Length: 524
Image (cartoon, rainbow, N blue to C red; front, side, top):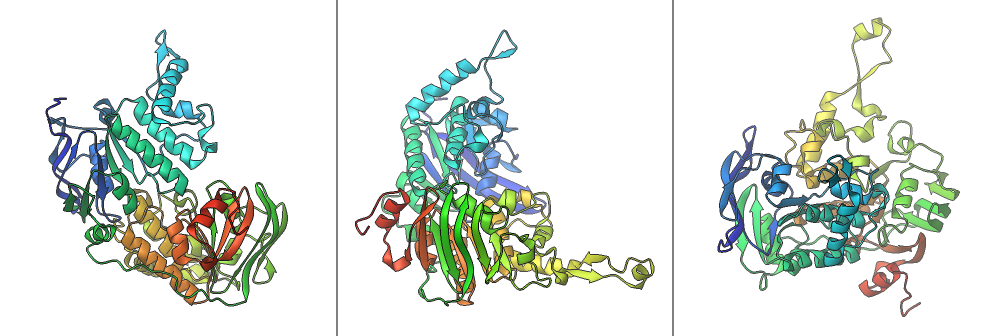
């Protein structure tokens, strides 16, 4: 690379067409060496498509890519890595059954005698990076058993191990707790200070304000704004430029709720959970707050019916619930209780990725009589009168309602596979399905993970509308701003125990942070 070249990376007049639809249209992005350049836009604005072109996953329909002032053609991710480009994806590309060390070196192993793996040589190189960038984690740990913050570090280390100079971070903090976010941002700044060039994609504008040198906003695949310097740019201005309108925050202004209990956990013990007692009422939003790994995953398993408690009771509308299959509480077929679920992992528990959005829209209605239609007399004559067929008109109408109301982009009228949508649009499809499916109680984990500020505001408004309609809501979120905007009651969990449960106006940020960390507050 010529050291006199002003830009290390240039994407010039890039367009990408999919069946007549342009995800990017004549878009130009220039990134200076040794800087953090933020890429901002709504879900479906074209950010991930542009980065996929740079990383060799897609080929541009038109346009030129320059690295160090020289035009390049990037045909695949391996070639991208060879010319010094690495990408940390929103959904990690890791093998759960491998160790962290094995995941890092996969595809780029050192060998001796031309045949045998030399993991010791790899380990020495990785440990030098760990020390340099403060990326400390156990190389021998099985990756699938590691917390998400460690998996994030493994993804970063994969790029450093390949000696890349340009790092793309796609929504890197979407699943991290506040303390983990601060640690990651420090690591990114360390990478920048060492001469790396960073492209940082995030919907959390305060993060961008904190670490970015420059920022580019794209909307509907086109560049709409560029900031050479963010020092004097207000977050509200960035938000308005991103979505093209002024955002008015949705906030819970009415903390009243009915005394009638909908779901109660009594003396629950399960794995790391110890003597959990929780009660959520009609019209109440109960937020459970804690550093990731303190029992939230186990609570999700119990409440949605994946597992049963070792001891204690789960009571739904005054009826024992833990021995029932979850579909018996989510179906309209002869049941009184309706449950909706927005899971923590949309890929594992929210979507069938190779199903269309239309088919995914009715996954939670498989036992509902309304989605089936009887066939004609011929089928009855053939002794198949008990056979039901999905009502295609109902499915398409319901899917259309989700897509339009929740602005699910890239769905191709619902016929696109869930896999091809951006992470944010996958999330909107799941959230829309669950809120629009009839329910009395909704269990929500990280509802706005990876969403832009406009989508976040809309989903918050729909959750608050659920509250106004008397729905009972449990919210697990690692976004403290989200909790404070929505909650009536906050329960703080630490090491599997509820250490405090109070009305939202009886706690402040500092007290919540101390309790999350297992420390006593001045009031205790």
